[in-house]
Amino acid sequence: MKVKQISVFLENKSGRLAQVTKILGDNRINIRALAIADTADYGILRLIVNDPAKAVAVLRAEGLTVRETEVIAVEVPDQPGGLAAVLQELDAKGINIEYMYAFVGKTAANAIVIFRVEETDRAVALLENSRVKLLPESELYHY
Amino acid sequence: MWSPEYEGMAAERRRELQFKRLKATVERVYNRVAFYRKKMEQAGITPADLRSLDDLKYLPFTTKEDLRLNYPFGLFAAELDEVVRIHASSGTTGKMTVVGYTKNDLGVWSEVMARSITSAGGGRHDRIQIAYGYGLFTGGLGAHYGAELVGAMVVPTSGGNTKRQLQVMRDFGVTILACTPSYALYMAETAREEGLDLHALPLRVGIFGAEPWSEQMRQRIEAELGIKAYDIYGLSEIIGPGVAIECAEQNGLHIMEDHFLPEVIDPATGRPLADGEKGELVFTTLTKEAFPLIRYRTRDLSILYAEACACGRTTKRMHRILGRTDDMLIIRGVNVFPSQIESVLLENGDATPHYQLVVDRKGNLDDLEVRVEVSEEMFASEIRKLEALEANIKRKIESALGINVRVKLVEPKSIPRSEGKAVRVVDRRNLYNG
Image 1 (cartoon, each protein chain N blue to C red):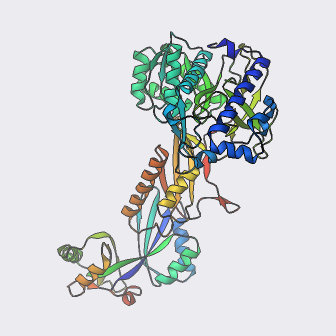
Image 2: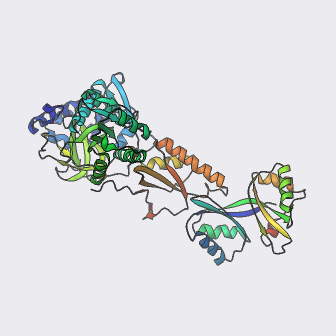
Image 3: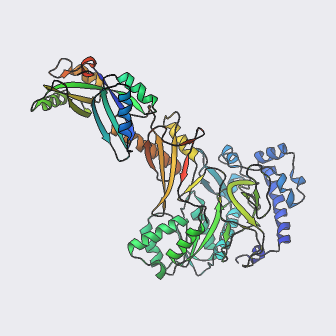
């Protein structure tokens, strides 16, 4: 139940983000979630889209450095303590988080949290039969 | 003059001396160095064919590539037991350019450096602070032995630790400073910050070299340090500092012609050019034993002048360096070739490294930024990994070059390419103007 995130390398220059999102829009790719990590010189744009393979292809065609990154998507009850419970579970199983970001889906009853963890396959195996609900690709991309 | 007999020698007598020494040098390398013998045989020439100084032009050139191919001691023309010193400078790729000296060679070097210090107005009453690096680099030790021969008080501070340099300069009553011109300006700036008035010190002369500088920069240095600034030229292949230096006229650098025979050639065709014409400087050493060089192409652009100089020296003068025929950069006195950085990136697993060197002068110090395009193989979605990649590239480049650099990861295709070829170097220092 790994899912795919698109990671894009961007220099800190004005208009870069607008350019990337326009490429995606022109190719009818819908952005489901996004997060940016940045340093003084560059940033990494992390995207969940409805069609990762196509997104990679069109961004690469425009000369961007882009990569598919394996992440896991967790459905979290949109209520106080929802995320804390999930994080406790991950910690208890010894799963180290590289980074994470969250978004709220269309139903608004639950939030989706994207985790990049150190060992994705191991994390998926550990979480498969736990209280943590992993979202499959089919659901995530159209959530 | 330190050696009036040689520095003020009548031109015709000097040519006789040069020819005698040239013949001896050519015989030496022909008999002792397989590389030279082979090259001369290929050119169909033997030492006996040299009948006058004008026949120099029939001898084959020697290039930096030849030095690389004969790394480390292949071009030495003395028994290694006779070699008492080694120096080295950056090569175009991983290998350094290695040079050796016999006792006599060190004597010649001290002699030409003593002449240089004298030409800059220095003498035994002076206190010379040598802030060139000591080590494999020829700057520090070269200036050091010359200054000792002159009988000056040598203050061998080597490079770095600017505040201590200034303290030494003030407390020891230094009168002559020897370092790179950019470091001189950096010292002036640090002195200002420290509230030290350099004009109030006994410092009166600067002997600056190991990197190109402009006339405007000289004026700035002279004003800021309250000294007279002299341009000294040298390269480790020929001997190190002391190949040529300005006199009080500051109108070209007098070449130590009885030891180093200069030519200027058209870099494209190799054809010798007349005095007054701009081209690539070529030197033949006339007295060296361990590492003689025949028609060594320096890649430095200059002009030779044969007119008499008011100082009384009769030697030819060379114009301050006007540029390079290759892409070598001199950063804080250290030779840097873009190809060295390319090698590092290739070693790092970057299959098609796209990079650019941006050189600037920040606060009077050279600053080298290495921009590296991030390929998909290098890229990761974690900042931590990209920072580690950056740090790794930085460490490897610094270890290959021996100087600090800043590494900046940039997007692919962001480094401008002209006709498909990347522009490897952007030098904003404006070194050769004026």
